[in-house]
Image (cartoon, rainbow, N blue to C red; front, side, top):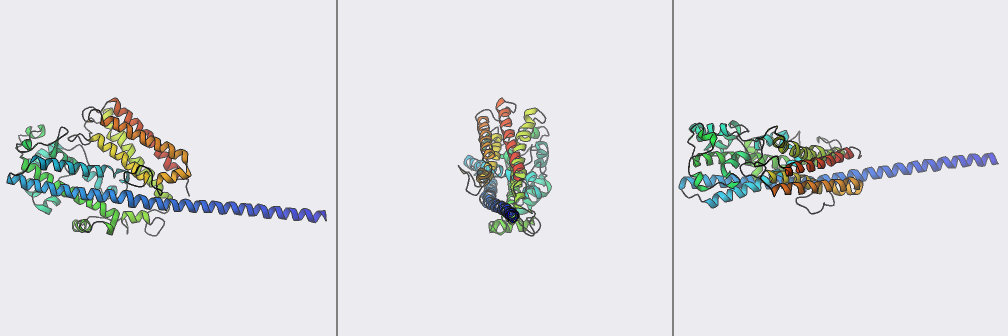
Length: 412
């Protein structure tokens, strides 16, 4: 009898052990499923409430910038251009510039795939080449030709003369809005006087308007490449007219993320999406700001590598780049606290220590850049102690973003 009781006890123990293992497996499956659902939800929040509105705002602002420069060109010819018109152009430019800089935490998409980033945001501006281009009456005439002039600019000028910084040179000088009086005289920059170039304000506005049209069209391409059919119909039609690429494989890029794990998407798991947000998105721009945008001039590796030198808004650019990281992590534009379905909220639920450290380093980086904005412009003092402090703070932030990517790789 004792023998049978012992055998029964062993069998019972095996059943209990098996049952316990089965329960553990069930709990793990439930947790993994919950994490996958959470990442899918935060990805949707990120795409629809960060990426989409940022690129739509950018497209609208660059469209407005082109319209105002076209109007300024006509007013200049009529003798009715006012300082107020120039000031309004500068305000719209800075608004568009802000939206662009706040998009740089997701450059890994169409901005890179279709070469839009270098096309619209290469610096330093090649002033010597610009002086030669604007001295060429035939080339200026080609630029002054509506949509054909825009196409000519995009195809022929080269990225060192295109995008934001070419326009910036025309409408800003020494950190101030360009004065109407200087626009009414011949261009006096050394690059122009050195070759005895007699370039008028009208020629400068012809160039700026054509480049703004190209900038607008490339920003329309960004919007459409992410949003697809949900983009503005006018923007969509213009992109089709320009015959720009907008799809990765068979999908627009927003759909590529939103359909992760499905046929046609380049993302085979939701985990890959989360890693991309951390690494290819946020970490990539943090590293660029600290070690290239600021670092090249600070270290003397390239003293002329100064972003936005004519408006003297470099620190604003850098600050907005870090805001693009914050928006990506918070799941919305300019939120004071993370959205419920966001990277940061997911971190708070799954890895509170990393969430705390990441939040702390993020705010420290923004604070350090605010200190920079209160001092001399970057172009005037790129080796200041404030610059070094900001570089260090942004690199600390980048360390936490890298830790986030590493942690994301462990999430099932």
